[in-house]
Image 1: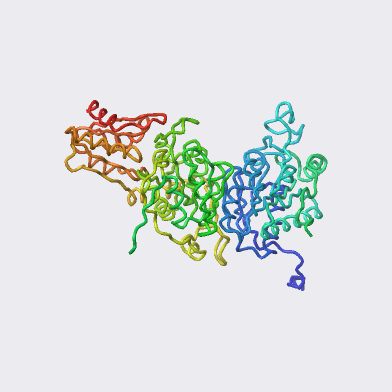
Image 2: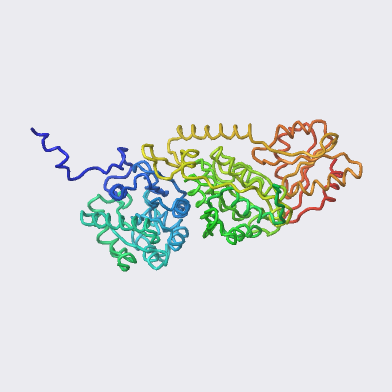
Length: 257
Length: 359
C-alpha cells in the first residue's frame, strides 16, 4: 500500500501548529516566511501558545498577525518596543516579542528601540534587516549599504548625500539592558537551525527575566533588490555579511554559566 | 463614624492619588510643565509596593502613549498624562487607539501655545481634544474638570467610560486646575481587577489566547476600503451611542437668567465669580458649564439659550468652543466670545465687561 508510509511514527517534519493556513502576502524567496515559521516552532516547543503576545510593525510584516495563531497587537510605525513594554509591564508572565523591519526599528523607531533595550525590558525584538523598504516599493533604508541602489538612491547610496548604514545591532550590544544580541540569517539549512536556536535562547531569557534580547536576521528582499531568490541569497552573502557580520555580539547568558 | 477625609492638594497630586485609589494598573509618563507633579507624586508614593500599580517614566510622550496602547490593549487600566506640546506628540498613538478600539486614559494639563508656547494655563487645545486630534474620523471622550475634586473624581470616571465603550478617554485640564490647591475628598480604594475579571470584562484583550478561543488581534489597519468603511460606520454608531448616553453638564442660576455664560474647566470657575459680580450690578446672568466637551451638550445649550438676550462664551483661548455653541444655538440667539491668550488667565471683571460691551 502506497499510504503505509504516512503514519505517526514515520513523521519527521510537519507544519508548526501555530502557522495558520492563510496564504502569505510575502514575495516568493523572501526571508519573512522562514522566520515566521521559526517563531511559531519556538513558541510551540516552549508550550507558550496561550501565553504569548506578539507586536507587529509597519512594513512588510504588518500582517504577521494573519499568519501566527497567537494574540497580536499592531503598533504604529516604529513604536512596537514601546507597545511591547506596555504589554510586558502589565503581564510579566507573558512571552512578549516584537517583529520589526529595518525601517521600523532602525529609523522611525530608533528611540523606542534603544530605550526599551536599555531599560532591560524582558522582551525580545526580532529584527529583519533586508537593507530596503520592501512594503512601500524599495526605498532606501537606514541599513542600505554604501553603493546599493534603491528607488530613493537610484545611483547608489552615497554617504555624502545619504549618510552611512546604521549598525543598530552593534549599538544594542553596548547597552547595559541587553542580555543577548545576535545576528543570524536563514539562507541555508544550517543558518536556519542557528537562527532558531538564537530565537529560542532569546525567548527563554525574556521569560527568565534576564533583560532585553535583539535577534537580527540578515534577510533578502529579492523583489526590492530586483534579483531572483537564488541570486538574492548570493548577493546577501557577498555584500550584506561584510557590513552585517553574523554571530553573537553580546551573550551574558552563556557567560553566566 | 465613617468620616470623609478632607485633604488639601494640587490638582496634579489629586490625579496621582486618584489613579492609585481607583485600581489603575499602570502609569506611563514623561515630564512636562505644568503637570510633572503627577509622575513625581506617583514615584514618591511607590504604588508598586502597595496596589501593584506600575509607574514608568518613558523616553518620550510618543513612547508613553504607545505603552498605554500596549497595556490597555492587554485589558489593563493604564493611563498617561502630559501638557499641550506633549499631547500633540501623542496624537498618533491616540488615533491608533481609537482605530483599534483600545480604552486608555490620558490627561492634558494644558498650557499656552502654539508650539513650545508658554508654561502658563490655557484652554487652546479644545479643538484638538474635541475633533479627534489625529488622523481619521474619530472622537475621544473628553471630560473637563473645574476643580481639584473633579480632577480626583474624573480619573475613575474616565476609566469607566473608556472601558464601557472601548474608546480612549481624555481629561482636559489646564495649568490652573493642575497647579492650584484645594480641598479634596479622595475616592475610596478600589482593588485592581484580577486576571479572571479582566478575561470576563475584556474578551478582546491580548493577553495570550485563552485556550480554545481564537486569537485576539488589535489593529487599526484594513486594506479593503469596503471593509474599512463598515468599520468606520461601526465606530460612528458607537460615537452616536456615547452622544446619546454620556453628555454631562452643570448649570448655575439659569432660572431667571437673561444672559448666559458658557465656560468649561478653569474658565468656568472664573465665570462663576463674574456671574456673582454681574448679578450684584443688576445683570441677570446664568452659567452653563459643559463637563463633557465631547460629547458636547448641544441640545441642552440650545434649550437653555432660548430667549436669552446674549450668550457669552468665555474661554482661555481665541475662540474654539464658541463654534460648538454657535452650532447648537444655530443663529437663534446672539453668541459672542471672550478670551485671553498665550497663558494669560482672565479676571472675572474682564468677563463682566465683555458681557456689557457685547450685548
